[in-house]
Length: 527
Image 1 (cartoon, rainbow, N blue to C red):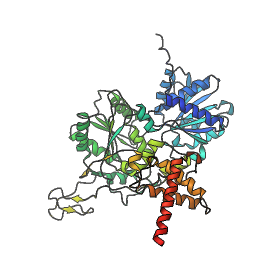
Image 2 (image 1 turned 180 degrees about the vertical axis):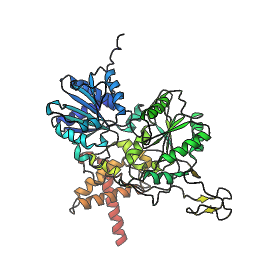
Image 3 (image 1 turned 90 degrees about the vertical axis):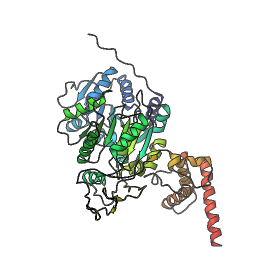
Image 4 (image 1 turned 120 degrees about the horizontal axis):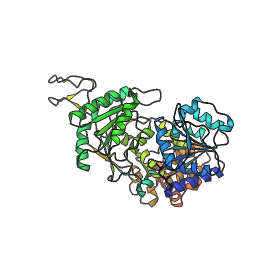
């Protein structure tokens, strides 16, 4: 039986542009380049095209993935385009070190040693923000190789020390406008009370404590899902839920089952990889018997089921902006009958990270040195509605720490059962114009671009002070906050470079007018 003919790769315009930018960075002398590319950009296809062109030079190329489960998936994609390759993974049937192209597991590569003449001239690192020590050491050893790191979220602390340059392949909003991503309709409830919650060594909420805090759900997850999917789709749709703990996920599955729906949990505690794979494969089917998957610390990246139409966020984050963005991406892939994805936020993450998400979707990543701040700085949840605790029997208000009602003796739910606190759903839109509102009365067109205003303010203040960079930045931030009084700069941007090339004349003129307005007001007040 003849093998099917190999497909010819055809790049989209944004992929062609990304390759051109990569070549420009290489010509400028960069060796290790991060390609920032959102969900649905086509990072693997772009990598395959780069490898095919590299093969014309008859040199070696490695594609490194951070999970063993992606080895076969990537290998199939390579074979589809006619790339003859071997596999670097223990006991894999395609192991052949003589092949010029290798698909490698980061874990296996890290355990092996290689002679210098066996090292590749092109290394592509998938999910480069994971930053395995052994992968970084390999990159250092392969000092003559061009290295391209792929990621949608380059926010890991230290990345700026390990990579030379950054290319924005496309922004999320550009892919949305071109129809390569599905827009989100977001319904957010108020944030769970995380005050005093225990923190792990990373500064993130501990899973157990986050799970227990999340047991008190703002808005009924099951009721909200039934109501919202009926309103938007006419009934239940394929759904993925992000849960803070295994116990919390088990309880959600139990309550969905009681309502007549089949939700299955997959987590880092799964006893069998085969069982997990079976659940995922069943879920991929268009007529799947599984209505939804509940994920605890898995499926935030590299999980692509395009016909998932609804996502539910129950895991609050304090620092991990990247996890929030990765979760959103699981619902934004396009499919034939999908006009949008529905996102039900019971964690408050869409509110906590609203301004930064809007900025990322519109502008991409400014630089690695500023990007790494997004996962290293803690944010405290923003409460939109005051949370009260009421007796489920007589309706009397209860103290949060009391387990029984003083009026009628009604008992709170037992530990592990999900309690429901009524909460109004809030519409959230990740739009820069909505997230960064200018001062009332400012009508200049340039206020729609808060990034341009920041660069203009920083350049103006740096030029017009002799008191040093620190004073200039504080002055610039004061000017910027005067224009956007209810907003904060996205994390890391304050410390970012002063890029004169990004300064626009109309933004500079607005900053100058604002400085003069402030000076006139100060002079008038002192007279």
